[in-house]
Length: 139
Image 1 (cartoon, helix red, strand yellow):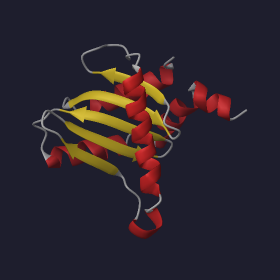
Image 2 (spheres, rainbow, N blue to C red):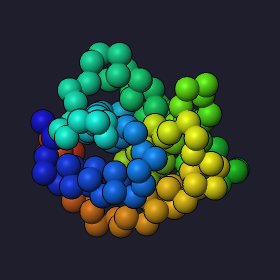
Image 3 (spheres, rainbow, N blue to C red):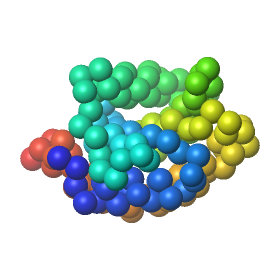
Image 4 (cartoon, helix red, strand yellow):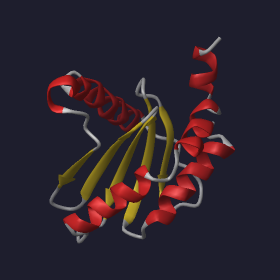
């Protein structure tokens, strides 16, 4: 179940730029908080393959964190594919996975990443704390 707070955060992210095609919000344990496309007004119930993909995105984050002391923290990863672009942002308490239009310039990708990082920690904290995985792990 997607909470109102997570939906609000997703809406804020989608408002950042029209080049964003798809959004996945993932907690630090790899749980899918939200999976939504700009073409659908409501979040999508992810299939098993999408759940596994998001879990691996979360796993990649934890692997990168092993190198933080030596190389510094990773803020985002930009991937160019034949048919689209992917952007993964490592924010406190949450990983944001985006697909972007293929024509998005590298400067525009950086601008999108910067705008999302500046959304504000309070909105992210409220969204994360509203999710069942966070609530059940705090008991």
